[in-house]
Length: 196
Image 1 (spheres, one colour):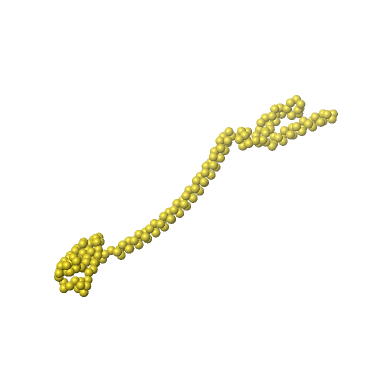
Image 2 (cartoon, one colour):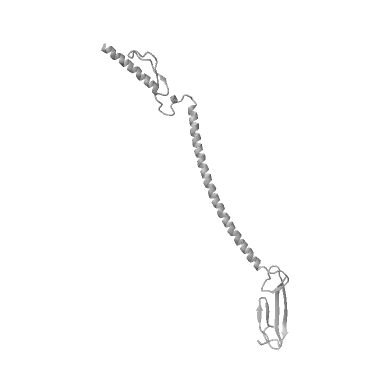
């Protein structure tokens, strides 16, 4: 009698365990019917083994879920990559802005220097009009060289009281040859000018 009660209790406990397993799992697989040593549970019970990983085929009811999940992962990677590229482009734009500012500053400095040089050139230009200046070598642009002389001028004496020799660039006042060697034909007067 006691053995029969104990056997019934074991059978009931086994069935309860199967029911609990059936409630705690997410995907199913059919268990075989109980053997002859498990009387009282004649129905077929359904239970599952928990999913071991996200790639376990039993965890996906739709065979395309794996492909969708892989596409989602790749989309996340692509989004992150695009974010990195956008950050690099932003940094590059900042660097280009700095270079542009420096170039603009250098251009402004050069322009100011060029304006100053032009102003100095304007100051060194000769006034308009017609006039002559004494030459000293070649004439400036826009001028034409003109020269004239008086040679062997008759003078009272060649002393410093009557003849003071001097050179004015290409022009001169002096003795004709060696002073006193030609009698009273003493002086030379040479003028070289630049005229416009």
